[in-house]
Length: 200
Image (cartoon, rainbow, N blue to C red; front, side, top):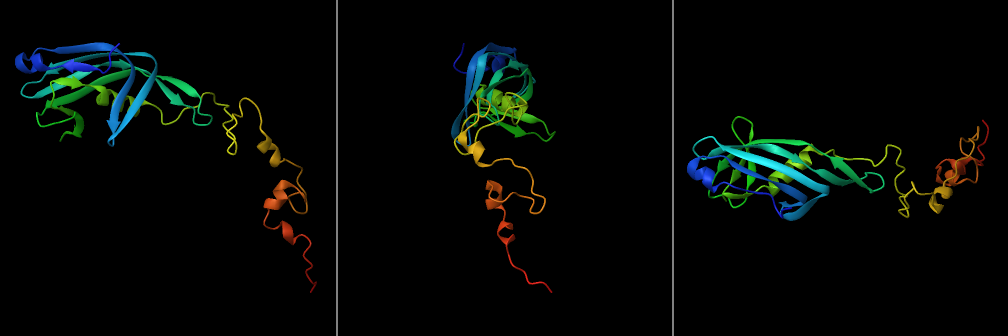
């Protein structure tokens, strides 16, 4: 288990030998917009990374990352485990002026991972790759009923008193909504029922 995924590129930059790193992660901590962020995993996530020299200051990273991401159900906020199998592949460029690793777009349209420290922390790269591959939202069950918007009751576990405040009743043929019901109070035309309109 490692605190952060790192790959040491000093020898590769001196001798152009390949570099390799592997390990397991229980979470990924990184920064986004200057704020710390954390991706949590349901079980240790295995990563396996190789970096090959392309000459000069350029390299190519490839490998695999297999996290089971912990997300929240979009309706009831329960934990949902989302397994991912990620194939890694990106160009890299060494730039000693880079304080932190970052991705930029090359003229070819490909993304390039720019780094300045040969002891490269892959946290931000793996986190961004994971976030891009993950679904935007998930449900713990397709039939999830969600939460009561008033009290927060998990409606999968039972009803709450707020559900009874909007009864479902038979439709009145004349008004469309029964008089005296909770729906009638919300109907802007309900007060017109007894309006005395003179006949022409």
